[in-house]
Length: 313
Image 1 (cartoon, rainbow, N blue to C red):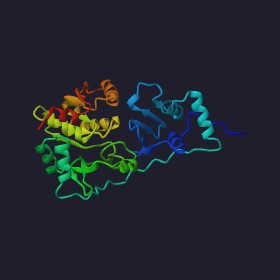
Image 2: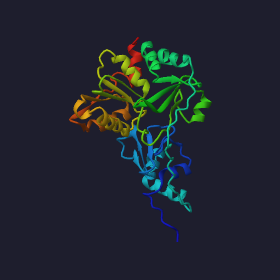
Image 3: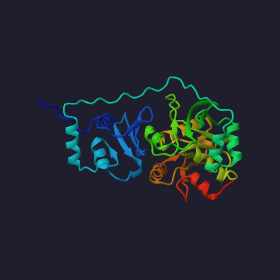
């Protein structure tokens, strides 16, 4: 007698890999689609969410919903495909990649970061004095591959980093890295405790907190609002992970008395569907009688585009 397939508990990552879907691991517990990088798959919870089209009821769920929305199949067609694909096969959940026991910062830094300076000032239009300041504070550096290193500091210790390329990827490199981006990007694995940390910069008491999707958006916002900001903490979460926002708030509560001193929480994500969906999630939250403020850019997609088009020097 043929064993019946439990359609609702099929390991989604294992199944999608078995049929050749373009997904890749991005952290201990998550995969993402190589082309549609707002589609994330949670291994432990065994489901996907496609943030860019979150309002579609099929943009989250298991293998059936994935096949329906990604391959435009009806529910019956998706079920038939799964039954056919898994005939005589038993899938196991993929093992989650273990967290490193310790984080070791291993990057060969260059003494003269010309490529990074040129990229940030001329390509991204960041003011020279801000770029030089962040280099002098050792918050950013350049490695031997001409990539910018954005260091994650916590208690004056480097606990992680992300990298941004400064040389455009060739078509061959895009194919190799399975990306449509023009520049290489990478978030280094770190310990379980610091996985939900990120690049951040603080001046004065952190009474006003701002969350960004990327380090360059953080620096761009600072460039535009440098004269207005006071007692602030700027934080890049390298994406839209709400767990990182929650981790920083917990840290601020334990170390900076957020319960009594916090004045504002600001979401400065991209003004696209994924960013707006994330903003709608945070708008419903209330932390110490403080609501999150919508600080999505108004005129352009992200804060770097706002900076470039303002012509800030």
